[in-house]
Image 1 (cartoon, rainbow, N blue to C red):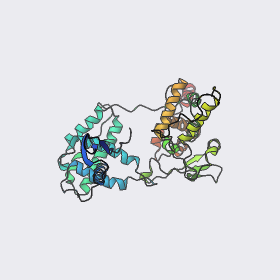
Image 2 (cartoon, helix red, strand yellow; image 1 turned 60 degrees about the vertical axis):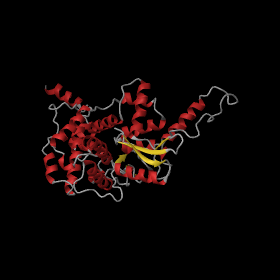
Image 3 (cartoon, rainbow, N blue to C red; image 1 turned 30 degrees about the vertical axis):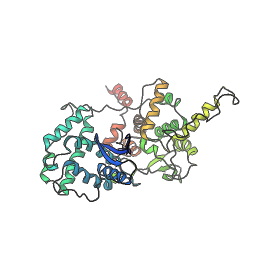
Image 4 (cartoon, rainbow, N blue to C red; image 1 turned 60 degrees about the horizontal axis):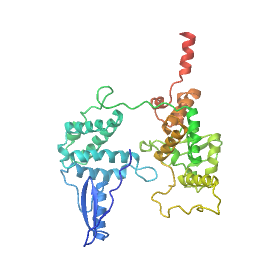
Length: 393
């Protein structure tokens, strides 16, 4: 699910008069005044700050707030609480932002103290109608409940409001219309090899490193030289941010000789530069196109003459988990293999480790605090079960 965009400072052209500025928030067009004027920009900044969770200067929250006003206060708190180690906003913050939009659309203008369990269940039914999975719905619904719990702790609403919401049981498997999450299985190494042949070299190296280490796609995308301890025979990579850091958990990924060999060509960058960069892929792609050119250089277009001076999109400084996944999907189509995702690659690595070294080793490689979570990723070795059956069954 994509991260919500900040509403744009827009321009409305007026014939015979100065152009007007406006911003669209929640489908409502709000006029700001003369386009480009300091007053219009100040008003725009105040509205955006309020929409993202800030409290506009001089507008304290009332003692009996509406849901919209409650959310303003909550996200002012969330912008401080949901932070990553490098000071950015965590993924948990963005999950809250997404689901808050549904709450705002459904009951935004109502007093927060008047929102009860029945209305919250109706919002949850909207989530079911959207086709969200049962587990994701339960997670998102609990985030809404936590918003009301925060409001109760700030004495913005009576404690009885959030106590009443605690009576709502989570959706249970087979007892609701919500669909179940699909079981994610490992991807076959033969399919991985076929796909790699159609990937840009940078992405192919990313796939190889992830297959060898079992790290998460997000951890792979943010690798930097400064985060890798190369002092020992096994390198130790500590991501600048990771999935469970808000729980106070640390994350260290061991990198063996095979993965080290792949990474060597990327480590000459600046210490804080990302290893895997889309602009490298684009440069290599252009080099290949140039090398395959049939038209003599004395004829036709010279290299680079047809490029836009200011393209709408430029290659970024690093891949995101989403762009990494999309590159793999496109390569799967070219290789004529069933599409697979980077998360399935993590399952493959985990299953191999569990088969060879046991569940504890797989848990350590994946960075899980609970073996029960690792069992979801590392499938049981069915060959061993079949061997037992042959001998004693």
